[in-house]
Length: 109
Length: 119
Image (cartoon, rainbow over all chains, first blue to last red):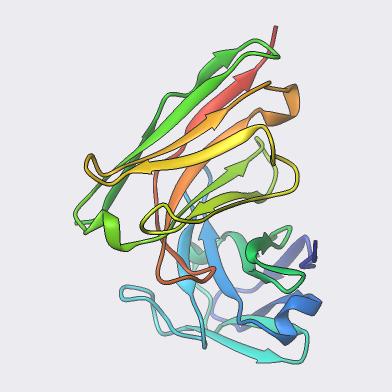
């Protein structure tokens, strides 16, 4: 099965911009989705196919893709954005399967 | 509003079986594919299985294939995961999640149910 690679941890100063990346061969064929998870809570979808933002997600969240890399950008990070972020996508080796990245812990300083 | 509520978790001895459930409400359950995703305490998310909206197709992660069975009862708006031959490494929070449309876009998640495999 394919893998998605994320940086384990990223930090950003309050109000600054941060980009969280996700790399994997499957991203050459399929879009990534992005999930935010705060401690003790279920994941929440923050970005989905073709970089669409679900209703209720602030517009400071945006997504992009290039080659084998998907990115989630937070422009003007807020304290409440501190969380774990996971990407996922269809597995290009078996497109009925889904693969998750290992997650990135975002710290807002 | 869309709600997914898991139940059935608990402490189970290795080798035993368990069935976890996910009760859906607030949407037309029979129109959506549904997934199970698990998360080992303190670790990342792992996709487990998917079942199509009508139950006609099911797919499993290699790590659980042959031991786990996903099913659904559209008349009762409920999703199931039967877990057999439980192993310590199956200890995790099990989430059900709704798929927007044959994708990896999981737009609603339940709160999860903890399965602990221990003697």
